[in-house]
Amino acid sequence: MAHGHKSNEKVVYVGDSRVKRSNHPNIPPDYTSFPGKSEAFIPNFLLKEWMVGCVVLVGFLVWTIAEPAPLGYPADPTNAAFIPMPDWYFLFLYQFLKYPYVSQDYILLGTLGVPGVMFGALMLAPFLDTGKERRFYRRPIASSLMFLSLIACIYLTIVSWDHYQHTLEANGQIPEHHEREEKAREAAEAGEERPNYTKPAPVASLVDADDPAMEIAKQANCVSCHAADLKGQGSVPALTGIGDRLDKDQLVDVITNGRGGMPQFKDQLSAEEIDQLATWLSKQKVAAE
Amino acid sequence: MFKSVYNWIDERLDITPLWRDVADHEVPEHVNPAHHFSAFVYCFGGLTFFITVIQILSGMFLTMYYVPDIINAYASVDYLQHQVAFGQIVRGMHHFGASLVIVMMFLHTLRVFFTGSYKAPREMNWVVGMLIFFIMLGLGFTGYLLPWDNKAYYATKVGVEIAASVPVLGPYIADFLYGGDIVGAQTLTRFFAIHVFFLPGALIAMLAAHFIMIRRQGISGPL
Image (cartoon, rainbow over all chains, first blue to last red; front, side, top):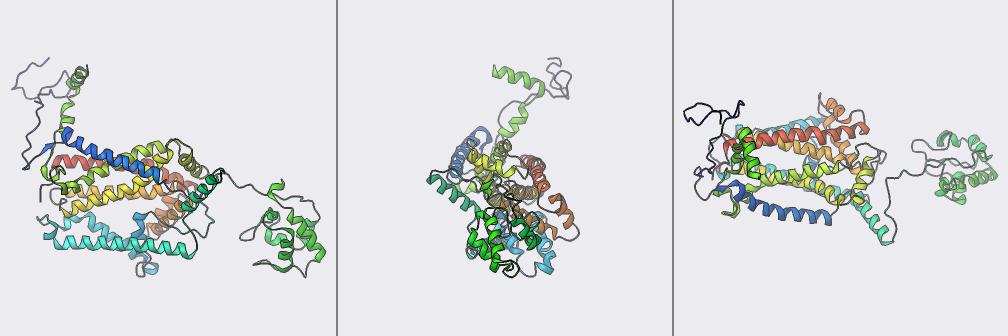
């Protein structure tokens, strides 16, 4: 050692670095700051903790094997029927914002006002509750406010979940990840491959575009709603691939008598033209390519 | 051999006090469930950290397969769930672990509140703990979008719409999160970056502050 072992030396460095030379006795401290049976964190306490931790971990693994993480269908921004649902720990806020006086004209109160005061108070709790007393039953104001908030959060969460279940029931829907799981199970039982939602759906194109029926379609103004390439626009369905969904007789009926937003064409087109058009449309199949 | 390597390093860097400080700190009787079973309430904080470590590890493995773009995100999660060996377990741990972290953190917060442990001199640690709480909620919100299924898409849409209704700042928050006018390709990459880099970075910094303060001040005494 370059510095020798003089104990009266003020600071002793190792070599020429600034790391102080250690004269740590490596004796565990006596645990006297609290009365009772204290023990060292490592290894005494941590080993016991780890045993509990291992049991928890195994339980957790078993849970993830028994209950696969949910996955629905790929995101579809045009899906109007989907009921939005946040993760369960946001439900209390989600439900809260549905009530009058915290939504619509009062939305400011709902998004900033009430949550701001609540979370602000929670964050600043040590500066609001400054008394020396620590036992909760001797701090009636702080404790009762916390109990009330807890009950409110639990209530809002339950109501929100209940409401979601009822909406699902009223719409005759089941959550997508359940439906997807169910279909996968059915496919597996039937010995088929699991349905794959990641492959893009085959795009239908026009079959026999030179057919004279196309001229009829143009004259009858089909194209003004179903688009010039008959691929549909807005809520008007595509006619490409229509043969997969409707047969010739159904097509004759729809063209003649109309359906939904579709007007009837029995006055503009002769029965012969309708027949010709329907024959051509019934050939519009994806598989025909 | 091990000892001489240790001594060689210790001579140069004086590392003994570092781990001695962690190892030798006392676990007082009133927080040790081995002595008083009811002291299990003092374990919630440690359990939160345990689950957080699981979240970080499982998340690291998930990013080996996950692709944050709107064409492949769903397909990669689907592949991870059904094709990758143990993929279901790793994804399951990350998915359910997210809920478990919230539960444990909630219980830990309640324990600290009802034992009055946030009182002087531990006010700052409570504030840091609340910041950790908000970071965790942010991680939950941003992670929810990543599988890119309908549930993810619409929950994010509704969430950002709520944030957008805040006056003055709202449109800027929405713009920052969306990266455009809709939940789309930019939103997904943003949420991925926030979920995987920004928030975990902030989380680790806050956890470090939380733990250093606990070591400085010690655990609160018996009631």
